[in-house]
Length: 365
Image 1: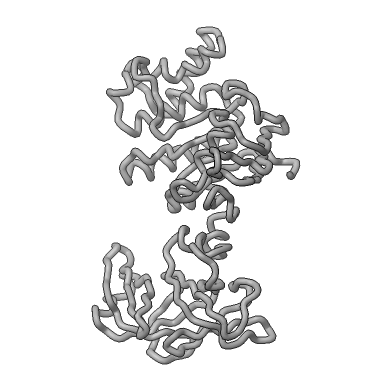
Image 2: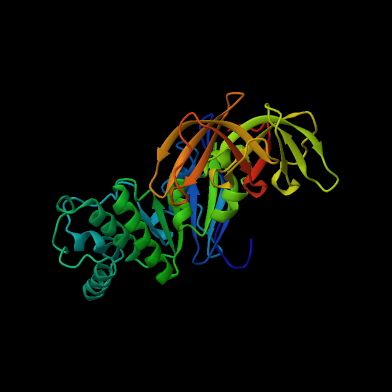
């Protein structure tokens, strides 16, 4: 642990009988940092969050906040604020009463409660809604009330369990920008659970990718996207194509020569290859759509194929290219560059080695 760690998880585990929900999760989070726990359903991210909040008791491992062991403390003694996926607002309480709930439970004076609630109403832009019941609020307004209720107690740590999942796409984007602004302004250490990789990449300082109850990679968005530690991470973060082939050679300088089933050769630097790869053994070449450019068929560092499908996405067109061996390659064609090739047209695609990655074929998703 570094001296700056605000939250530290040490080998945190949760078992339900023979089922392992979380397995030895260790993670340090700095003061003021927003870390996303990202992964598919059932990967253990929400269970990890609920153990930090105190709603689930760990089977083993420790949880520290500001150097204090809180592993066995009840939720109300942990100095954490929680925003639930369904917001969990009290339907019989007004906006103001929902926000004030945690302060009233702590026995604060009425004048101080009114002052803190007024401050949160202003911060979350809820003016004029103080006397409304939750059922008379929009989804976005309910979400802001839930955040205000979590923040009003001045928590050391803010915990968020997929808080935007019930919002439509446009509102979800504007609300997460607003939440990030508030988190920055308060310097609040936060842990955010989501299965949406775009959401995690947009607002998190770092991402902890989880699979099968374990953390499989931790890093900044750019690091995880550009240098995924495994095929699972590469498939879960962003879009990518995966081509089966083999290595024909490994140069003294470390460059790996990938040979596609069609015979084309692609050179990839050692820094972008799994360790322990051997020549003439099967492997998988990962290619990001934006790392591909049009070229003449048969040129070095390229693949040849036929345009199979086109999908217009506004500023770019997704082009699905079918290679001679039946494998498929996804490319981004910028609309500003002119019309994309037509369906059925033969094309050549140049590979940017810095946007490629070679995995051992034994690596599974």
